[in-house]
Length: 162
Length: 350
Image (cartoon, rainbow over all chains, first blue to last red; front, side):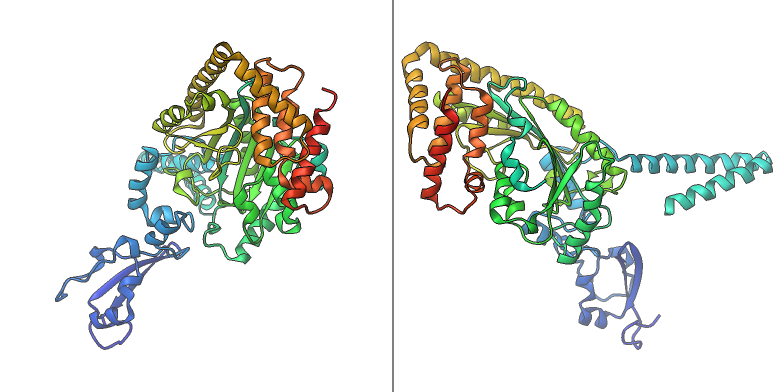
């Protein structure tokens, strides 16, 4: 595969970035990766770097990782003591887990759940149950019942994606 | 309703009739909530701020909620009117000072208020007089659940309600009990009280909340932990801690009365004398004297001074209240005269 930027060199650096929850892959040669500074702007894992590199590429420090939705870094959070959006709780998850443990002595919510979320969890549970049911119904060759379950699964999946 | 109409009434929580009202002024609960899919206010552009306000406002004003609310956009109010809302404990100081689209929805008896675009998109608060933690929580919970019908809050099964500051995440619940602790202060026991509360993960703040100095021996004790405990657990823990403070405060009050009755009587009656006759009085002096008078009234050193009147005087003698009553901007010296006159008139005929 050729580099997406210069289209000449062989792409040896493959970066997976999450933007607005959408996964995007970027394939660059080492030189272009350095020049564009892509390495410090993207949130990527070491596993996405394929072999063949002469020297190890530096993984950006957590404090430099930017939330793709609100654009703040963990070090900016530390200065302001305020997060930029709900997604930060996922982007800075491991750091926040440590912080929450220190502040609250816990990392797991134990209080109220909005009823909309309750309904969603119930639907997800039902969906999982139906999928298991479907397997056993198909095995026992009860096709009428299977069709019924498939319809219900479709409806639930539609509702959950909404 | 207009802001100045607040002058003809006082908050339900000031009536001084709730349980334990010899020491506890009020119980306040607040919930921090953010809207799903909107950035937090830390990074919100002016457009996002007004989008949030436009989205939330009609839902706060609609009649289906458990309480009818009146919405004020803070940009439409004068700085004196905004400060009046701070003095009433309806909005925070930060909310008063901030810029951009923001507002507050208030229930008629001032027991409930909802700030829009403060540190989080929504900050709901309920205040009740005396120690009424369950009652206050039940009311805020009903409002929160009703709002969930039309608003989608940012929530994660692991972290709970997601807030701009991780110190509020989880339940988003902060409970504050405002107490009058003059005997603890006079007996120089306050440091001990503060230390033991801090060890138990409670914060202690002044009369107007975060970052304010204790004023007139009033202290607000609040939970720090919001994650990993249910709302009811947070309440029950506080319900075990507060009675301990009440017990000590009452013991110290009675000890003062037994050990040095003359000294206490002198302090209370001097305070009464000054308040009843002074021609100029600063806010600090008034608060200190009212605090002494309140102590005297709870110990029957002086009779016929209702708690409601004293509680109201603490609020109505604040700068914005005086200026709104006089319908003009007053410099500090003019305020001192108006304050003295206002107190004299309210104490007349007691």
